[in-house]
Image 1 (cartoon, helix red, strand yellow):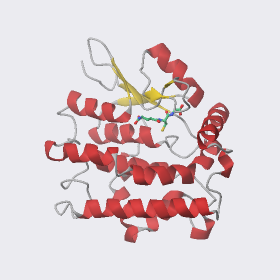
Image 2 (cartoon, protein in one colour; image 1 turned 90 degrees about the vertical axis):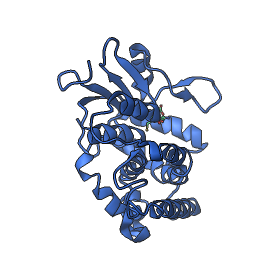
Image 3 (spheres, helix red, strand yellow; image 1 turned 45 degrees about the vertical axis):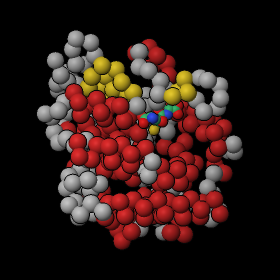
Image 4 (cartoon, protein in one colour; image 1 turned 45 degrees about the horizontal axis):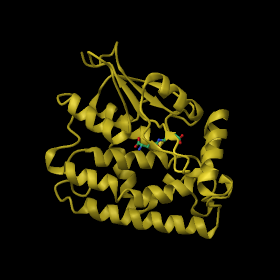
Length: 268
Ligand SMILES: N[C@@H](CCC(=O)N[C@@H](CS)C(=O)NCC(=O)O)C(=O)O
């Protein structure tokens, strides 16, 4: 039995106080994919400190080890439980989830890993996108605690300050060289992505491959949705989020790109 409206896929996500409640890059990838395919799903919201105990209890595997050298497992969202019989499938990690969904539901909605572009897409999401993920992460990270619930906020502040080796609020301060550098890196990364998209003549530069949305486009859209976290650190650019700045770059092509996803932002 596959997922049905009365027995939907469960998607685990981290709640924020922002308009859509969904905000985080990795879960947007899965959510956009489920929305594009039109698969029935519902969201279970889990605060950061509850991810590990919840997933341990459910039998959902960790996706990596913590980067602090402790060897502790790192449990992350997104995760899904698909009620496909005989046993429900429990899966974490956005790329394996995307590949699983494509394979398990080949006749539901559009294909996002057509054979012709699958390898190029996997290469793109393993390499090039990180040139924009790293600077965006630096630019938005100090703003994240403000949009989380109190326990999530405390967890994120503690873990990310330790990772960055300094108090989170001091990362990429308004007007700092660190912030200017992050914006420079981000612009360079976006220019490189624009070039890759321009090479796709069939898609008129609007899609990564062919003339339809594939998973590489979903990944890029998820990054841009994450960049919407409200921020007052770029007032010199006259924007209220990193996304506001990105939307002005490359002749507005990313804003036009995101119009394709306007109908895919539902949070079930
Ligand atoms: N490789 C994983 C990474 C997922 C990830 O890092 N998710 C973040 C939210 S965007 C998370 O759940 N972090 C939990 C934590 O930091 O404890 C994927 O692609 O799904």
